[in-house]
Length: 269
Image (cartoon, rainbow, N blue to C red; front, side, top):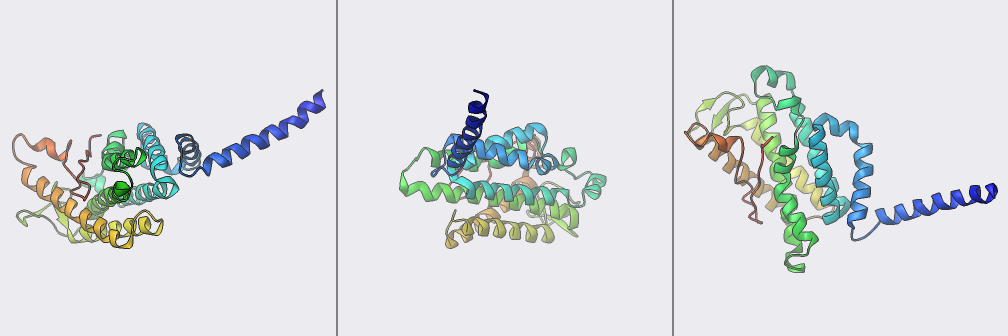
């Protein structure tokens, strides 16, 4: 009897492993495969995650990762992972200098759940619309385009802001061209703007290489991201000091004037 139990154990382990592999390879992805893949990746990538997110932020990111894998598979997940790595790296650039100037992100750049949810709101809407097939095949590409464009926009925003605060020699308000200190809401710099543009081009190109969008749609994502960020700067510069509108800079933005016309909440930590 002990021999039979020992013999059956490897067979059981082999069967579970085979089922796990089949689940991971599910095409199209299922909720079960999304949960399993996401859990494994989060476990292996935990050292990177804790450097850029708080514990509650990691929990929110896990939900985002699961939703992304379910909607767009490994390619969509990799796009969001790339966004996170580049955004975190940009946030950490010259952190000591930013802290000394009082313009650094809280918790040494570790984002909370509000930041995760806010940054991904438009993308999550596109993912849900894709999962439930809203609009049928005619709109399937549109949801994928909106998903990529939303993260291009947020990455461009993050990189331009963080690089501008670190290396911007001259920062000015886009509404009046008045020179202002680094970190001023609505202010831009040539260094930050250029870095943000490159970031959006990079992420859109990755989305194209992974089959998320067409080559022609890379241009749409990049142009839309720059329009969105310019719009944010204009709103921030115009309303930041007006009585009754200071909350705009810190709680709610009507962002992403992208082709999918979605609203995105951000910076609500």
